[in-house]
Length: 65
Image 1 (cartoon, rainbow, N blue to C red):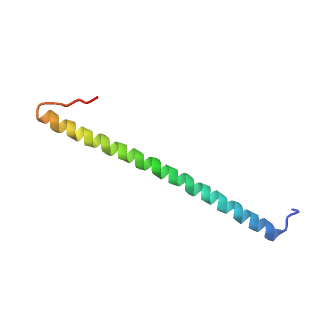
Image 2: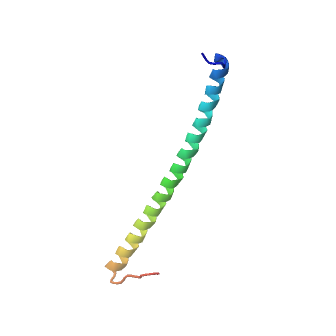
Image 3: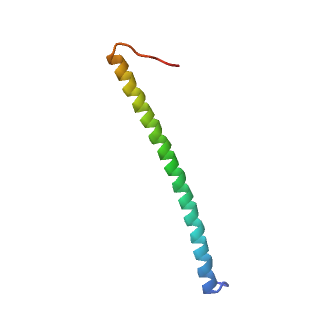
């Protein structure tokens, strides 16, 4: 049998669950930020590819370093 009374144990469990939920939400926010950055990078790559294809179709390719 636990030395901690049941109501106190329930309160502690609820508090612990709330902390874990805040951590989970923070982690999900970081994951969403990473997905947005990846999406932005993919969009930039696609825009660059389209621009290169247009230039090649016109007979040149502007290569920038």
